[in-house]
Image 1 (cartoon, one colour):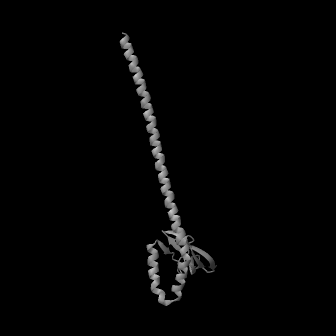
Image 2 (cartoon, rainbow, N blue to C red; image 1 turned 30 degrees about the vertical axis):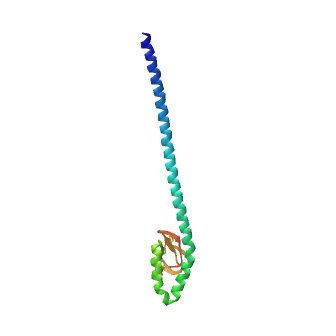
Length: 154
């Protein structure tokens, strides 16, 4: 009978060791899964920060070019021989994701796209653009610089 009871104790000890090992494996597996999830979240966060930095660099570069575009616009407006250049310039800017905000006289004033510098009195309630003082630009569909305009009520 002693052999039967010894065998039972050995089985109990073996079973206890197996339970402890299984618990350790489960704990290590959970730690590994958490570490993987943390790393994946970190990678996604770094990718988002990298994309944001690239976008800010693009916006900064394009914003520095705007005064040059203003000068080119004034040159095209004052010299008739440069008129074909205007279409080429507009096409190139559109390919780069940069487009002018519509601020032609008679266009309805929109404070999201236009900065009103002055207001001419009128008899109406509708505000329209009377004159464009400086063109505005959209970059990637977002306002990079609002158009500076004079507004009148009609």
